[in-house]
Length: 245
Length: 325
Image 1: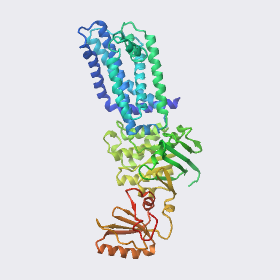
Image 2: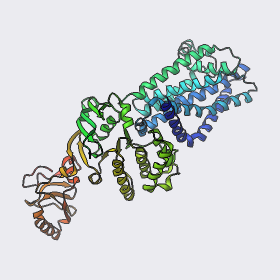
Image 3: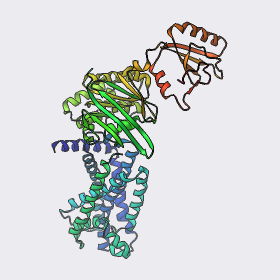
């Protein structure tokens, strides 16, 4: 166990240093996403009611977390596959899941500025007070881990790395426009509602809403569904990174 | 040198696409404390073989053992036993040379103090101290390769696998790098050197195998591969542009053509005849220059893998019916 923790710490340092040059750029992108989704989407509504304001403010952190997990992670991992860097990383005497855990930790940390910025921006812009529940921390970690593991799975499952990059564009497009993150699920047609009762996206947004506002959300169900998707993503990631060509 | 076997592959076959064998019945063994060269042209299957040895790729059939441990069943053992310099890019962007080298040393189980000392020793020996604190983002290909070499040898495994270690590296540091490779053996490691730089390999390795089209076509010491027959001298003639060679004299055997170069073997006693023949060709404006020297490993290599459009045999123009070299 001590050896695993030591390896985790060293790989965390390695990945942290590797990402250091991009931290400032990431921060800017995250802020732009937050601004875009809170203020930009607000223009769609003729009048922002308190409930709409809550949806926009609490939906933006989920979008930020999913953008990192489902876009940035697959793109960086795909680039690594194209350059052959995983041949080197996998040759080190470090269990592959330990490396994935260290990498996921860095990505979660990278997501945090966007999450915090979107919450502060939303509460100031729409003049309402956020009610922080202690459950917000496990909720954010769970959303970020789920997104990252699914992103890892996409990147490693694609036969060609370029295919993963294209897939992420399609996924993020579907999530941003056709997912009940920035608006209630009741606004979607019935068949889309049925799909979203199985997919994790609605429940990720519910986690954010239920731990930051007084909106009526089944938090237990949201934790269970997102937790199940997180476990699924972890298992698939584990199988994919451990396979040998 | 101890003859105890450290690494052994037996009848290894690997295919990525059905029906196309990238490794075809590859069997070889490395003894403790030797530097073993794996030579071959691009696409010969060298890197695939290495990837199987370190557990990145699973063979279709055959066996691989390190120190008697089946590493197909236990790839984690291979990763612990082997330290590896990949031919592909090493993820060092954002890190300084020193950070990258020390991190790998720690990952490979070294303690902080001894890893720092060893990293410093390598940086100093390879004259890289000026880069020690600089970010690898600005490094040239050669500098990145040197850092990757240091990462592979900072805490060397029982087997150190170096895939094209000297690509893009300047001649001075190449020499220093080869000294460090030799030093690895003194530290108790065995080295598997993958390269297509035959001249460097000849000086560095104790034994070698030449691969071509997925198969090991020959294996032995550089001396044994060069042979110790009567025709142990190498004669090379460079033709003037657009000139063709008249009949090849009988003393010149096993000739091959590489562009304007004609290379053949001869007996030491025929050197006088050969130089006289070449001088005549120069006077007639047919030959530009010539040279005579001992047979090199490159000649053996060219003879074995000299197929396709890079090298053509002169079987047709060789009146003595010698085998294509």
